[in-house]
Length: 617
Image 1: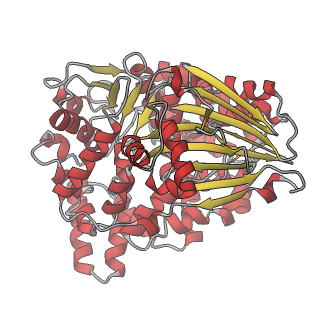
Image 2: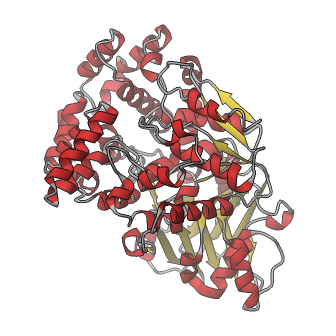
Image 3: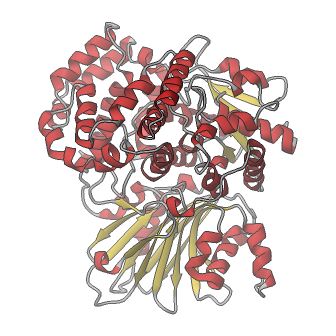
């Protein structure tokens, strides 16, 4: 796991070495073990290394192919590198190292861009062909590893993190208004190529780019070709025939992700997903010495899952806990803003941030359950899609039965409210979300609502449950993966996500609806697959917390009242033109008086203003 960066001059003018080193310094936390550079004919590459596979100096990057025609910089892990290596040896290739990096560049030599479909892993990489003067770069299927870029005339800047690009941009960045709109209205980011910076884009998941480095091509925008190489809709496979077959593939996914030359731990929330990983490691791989890392808040407080986590205390001797609170989050806000470089829509990533901070003293690799909710309909609002699907199919009796089961088991109206929202036209859905917030500036809403199609249209407009799951992979999952990448790499950790093995995803999403949602419960196939293995209170949990925190109470403390009021009454906050300041102030007063819980919105206000202060102002 590493960080990559680079500058490409189309006119082949030399890239200043000092600029590549500035990019490297901005993300050194991603790779504390080594760094390297490459310069040639308008190309400048930078690399920082976190050693995971083959810890020897042989893993140094940039790495060259055997004939030195190709040079690669690579961030990620190719988990099936052992099998690919054997296949390549059978074809006559020889290897000097035990790294997955050498397997990756040799795969490109052998198969070209078609090798992408052979990879099982998480990656961004860039390869320069020194003979043809071409650059090829790729991201993994679901966007686990990031790749940002900036087109600046005849030069291309790219990096694993936005601050590396800002370090050499040479001018003050500006805020992307459409990204701010999606953040405030829908709590969403990263559903398209845009970032919060107008000047910086990202290569979308499942895409690659090509670029020929030659004078006379105009600017990079004309020369750079971006192609979608992986489309989940076109890659769906035969569904698993039963929960046992699902479990076998899940075990296989974890087996690949246990390949490491450094210690591995698990981020254990106490929920179904992370607990399934821990149980599989214990029962299938006898990893009873595995270290687990959990955030707790005290019994009875929102977000605390101690009673479920403690079900493992007799099986695991190495369980570690951290207790975030109002004091730690206030102290950590400046570092969180620096670490993420873009606004965050909830305090959930802060809990993960603290878990990674805890884990860094014990392991170098973590596993967690990211992606299971999108693959197995883990959020309550998926019931809305389920009900909508049954209605459109004319199954009114089934819809009524599922609605009754949902309410009986959860005592919640969220699934039913979501159903109503999803039945509305796209424009009305966007307006309904704005009215729900109650504080969005009217002019700001009117100016940007027309661009809300990918969320209000495709994501919320899914006609079937399967469409909703696929659209979540396309438009929603990536921001969670981005937060995981930033949180883990800030503490020089590699985070692995077994549920996102493409072999598992492509066969789960095609399963019948009743294998995903049944009798008012989500993730049916996983629950059945873990029967008799997982502690029953966890297997049959009805609540969904994830990395929840008791932020509502945090934001009522005297210290936070002073801090938040200082932000929402500041002239700079009012000058953004994003919110109705008077309504924001009124909502916060209601929150303090316990006339409502608005912690999610309060967090967005304070994080957004801190981001403006740090990166824009």
